[in-house]
Image (cartoon, rainbow, N blue to C red; front, side):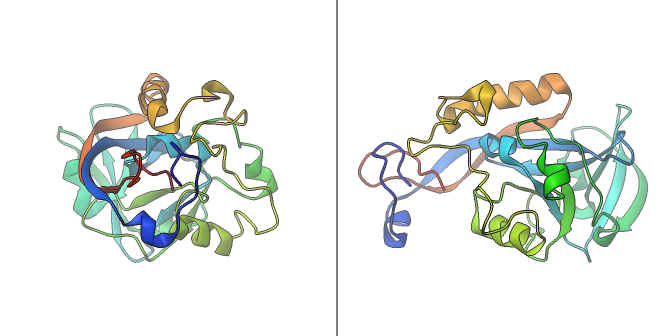
Length: 227
């Protein structure tokens, strides 16, 4: 939808104005419950969706590695993307298939929906075959109400249901609701820097940068769409 005019879009409008734009790019570490020193590292260009994270997805047949850098933590990433993770030499501890991770649970980045870990078995690693190998880490962060593929995958695995209250803490103006208390009233795109700062302070921000790609804009207000 177009937050600037508080109006939902029809599909044809979504693609009516595409621009080459710059956005933030972050690699974020999710600590596994079974071993807090081992982190699943996911890549996203929408940091503002991280407070709504409910799951991670890996490709079961792809090869992943456990890699250790200059810090005490070990990172799980797709083998082909290892060198993009950090500008340092990484020691490979072991290689495994993505299927090894499926079902593992992890610690939520934010407390807002932590109760769903018990209620819906959220914050666990799921299996998915729609992961691409040309970018990212092979670990995909899932905020199911911000993306069709994430919604369908979390629905199929029972993380969400059609009958539960949607985990969508963003109002019709594109601002966080009271469910995300630390950023309530903040336009989501404006919250990226604050979220990245918080992740850096908590040690979860592995890497940050910029990403340039085509992005849909409102043809009336020339502002980025929220979807």
